[in-house]
Length: 435
Ligand SMILES: [Zn+2]
Image 1 (cartoon, rainbow, N blue to C red):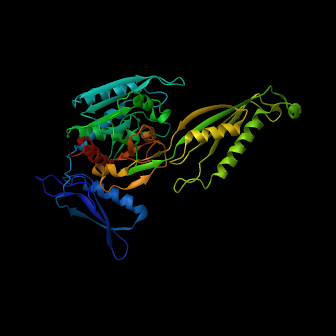
Image 2 (tube, helix red, strand yellow):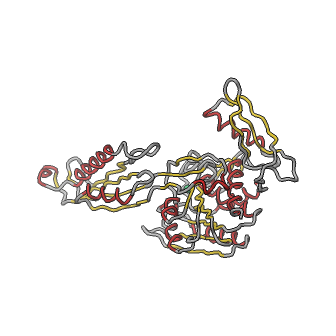
Image 3 (spheres, rainbow, N blue to C red):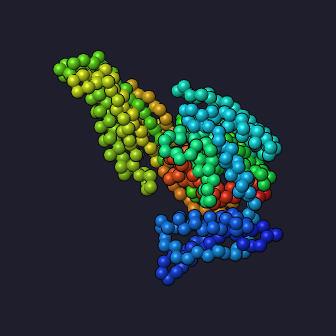
């Protein structure tokens, strides 16, 4: 049995915690505190757990617990203030392609200034491929041993929303809006935690461009302002579990050209589309040769032949053809070595590396036990900027409210219980290690 905390000494020792009874004979298998010292969210938490356990367990009975005093006190996060912060953040249009991330960065600069950091940096950073500038704000209290990082950009909202995606909708157990799950919810959690804790030897970094090229984090690292940081928590939607590893990402385009012409001349004319297709087949063979590479759950290279484009027709030899493909090297693999092998395979193609992101694995997950206790540890199916911080020598994990099923889709939402739970852990991190 595990609880994420206990009620403050002055209040009754009752919290939102439940025993989940499963199987025959009925056996208590798990209980979890959700960080509510008053019990006012018991009904919401109960429903959340029923939904959660409904997938893997038959929930036969659930009961409320009285928790005995433990050493780690619950920080009294105000949920309504947390959601107010989230409403403000969601209202900023930071959609890739159309939004303005710097306006949100400036707003967060003002907000962080209220919590009296010893140092507060803002930087506007140019981006490649015609994108507008983005940037970051970094607040530091004391000697920053721990870093909390959240990206403030979102993916485009797309079709299918039943309300304005930038207008936060409050429902009984969740809040709906663009970026609530990925990952403005975590930014709101950190701001709500800052309202009630005194930060110590910690840095908070809100940065842009994560969803569309990750060109800001390298600028932060290059600034040298993270040089003292020993460990980092990168906030991404993990359902409040600790992410310890994920794959890298290598995306490449390969171009082919020729003079074009009537298809009756194809035996004696360069055939760009055929060359592109042959390269696609070669890369497919390379993928098949590596199906057993790596260890579960990261076996294989996840090679994807994404698209071939040309200007030909069945009776017209094309003048150009372009192939796009990607692969995802497992933790411990060398993305630059993969890139070099692919370039060797491609021979005469005109190659362009779109992204070459390293895989990620935490260096020492036990260094986070004071923050996360017995929280479940998982491997992640998606890439994060934890890889960049880890490459910079910082011991890093990934943790945040929300999950992939709720993010990057119409009516994105995050459960309020997850926001409360994440805010508790961020509050512990903000308070610094006990000396
Ligand atoms: Zn994200």
